[in-house]
Image (cartoon, rainbow, N blue to C red; front, side, top):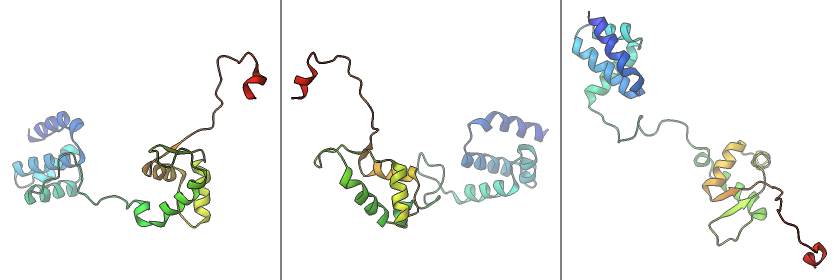
Length: 164
């Protein structure tokens, strides 16, 4: 009977639960069953006992996250630009001579490819990818521009006079 109740609740809630809320729900359900609750909820939901135990610790500690967060701050990889401050300086040194747009303007752009810039940075000993180069360029206010041919709709009646 208890298994069917837990399974029905979990089946209806599971699609809406985040990683953290799933742990909280499993932990509170296990607490409501008392002794053996962790095993019961684990067997029914397929969640591991360690996940439910971690949820119990979180519920008992009363720790709450900021609204909109799913995990505590500080998780994940340290951004490459923060680990290596010289990276941004080297990138700007490579891009600045070929940058277009007025220096006073907010909009600056480069037509150099991110792959080429990544290769040049790698020759300087930086461990970067073209995706990281694109992200860094956007972060410092550059726009990436493609070289494109523009097709004009009308032609000038006297092309020689146009260019004189």
